[in-house]
Amino acid sequence: MSPRQRILYNAQAAILQALDSMSDAIDDASGHTDRFAGELEAFSDVTARPLSPEAFDRCVREISGRARESADELARVQTRLQESEAKVKQLSDDLAQIRAEVYIDALSGLFNRRRFGASLESLAAKATADGEPLSLLLVDIDEFKAVNDLHGHVFGDQVIQSVSQAIRSSIKGRDVAARFGGDEFGVLLPETGSHGAETVGEYIRRIIERRRVSDFTGDSDPVAITVSVGIATLERGEPPRDLLRRADKALYQAKKAGRNRVVVG
Image (cartoon, rainbow, N blue to C red; front, side, top):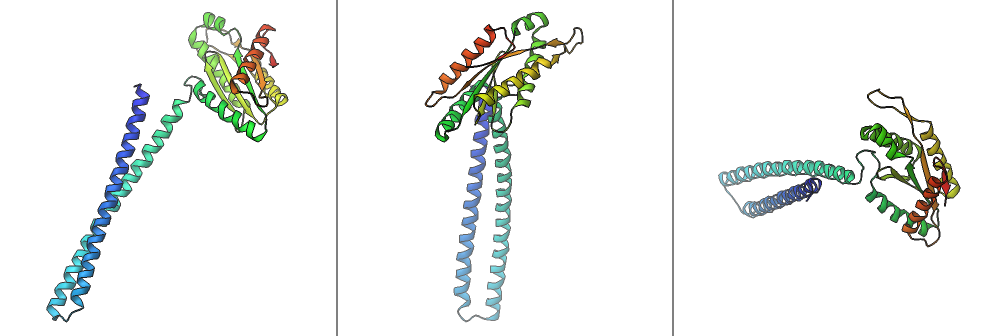
């Protein structure tokens, strides 16, 4: 079990424990309420008969004391419930954060390939059901290996972050962007046909082409980076894997044609 999975497991176990505590508190409250209801019924039975003033006074004092005790106990149960509720909420928030992190690529801040694959499946199914277009962009950094070899992997990480920022700033709404790993990115554009996808791809390409990435040490001049983009739009009845394959083929054609360009497959 990985450290992240262990944290997830422990958080889930803690939530279940807190819920059990809430259930126990409710059971306790129910038990006290039932007992007090029985005592009230007995008091009613007793006071329905003729009593001396002294006996009646004793009954009233006794039931008043039991009422205070019951109220105090219910207040303690309420406190337990509030504490458990707060703990469950905090653990639920933590759990949601952990689950979100499972799908985030740490370097780029975009979704990872696992989340992208799930999004591709769900968005393709929705596009097919609704009769709406769905386009896929594959974005690959040109000559990334050479950049890494020349400037080092730390600089390569800066390049990936710069490209990720450019992609993130170019999408909106229900669009999904992910880093596949290495120097390749995927972008899903729901309700977008090939023309609109080409416009987005060209916009991403131009933004990145204009950028310059500087070595954080300041020992070298800023470096120009370019990307190649392959685009495919879902066809009627097409499996998502075939859409991905066609976008990959378009990306290969963009690379083969000289890089720094957009090709629609």
